[in-house]
Length: 214
Image (cartoon, rainbow, N blue to C red; front, side, top):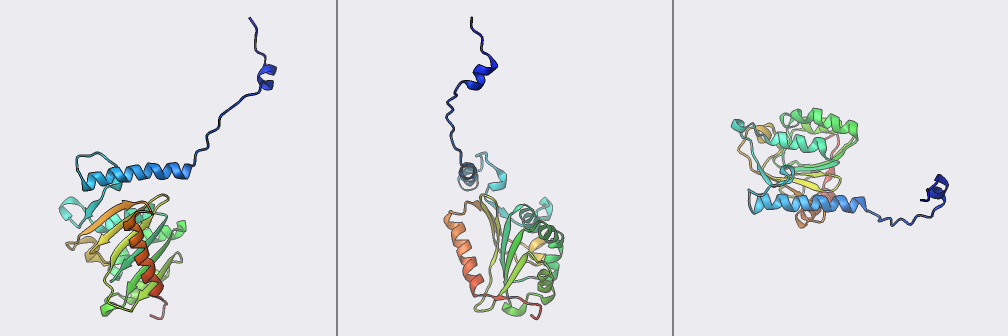
């Protein structure tokens, strides 16, 4: 019986079939499948088991259930890679509970864009000046037409999450009022996400930079 020496192992040519794996593509396929499954749960049959974090849901303020719009927004902010907010009204009481989260994002270098308006002169200059203190956040003011949007866009490594509905950045809207907001998850190529991002970019392009003089 012949034995195999260390020299034989070193000198024996080995043919290995290496299969290149595109990790980005692989990850996107995984999240795609999870989003499809979660969409089935939210839109087809609630009994279908899926990733709850990706399932479409209605976000409301409900004291009895401990549910707040604020909690959902804070949670997404702390996990996202970039964020975009478009709301008609911003008040000091609305951003105060978000300040620690915004400080955390500033330290992490997570960039954000906030679009608002001077429509009805409801937004508080004090609140906007406070937001200007964050170097990671750009703020613009849309003044061309009646502006009444309420949308929050969170960009992740491989997908987006959208919260669109009735909540402005005010304390009542985030914690007390009867508000309806829909939260969905989508790949960037999804038509809904494309439409929302395109709309945000169009409004952003037509808005003016906010300065401390406002």
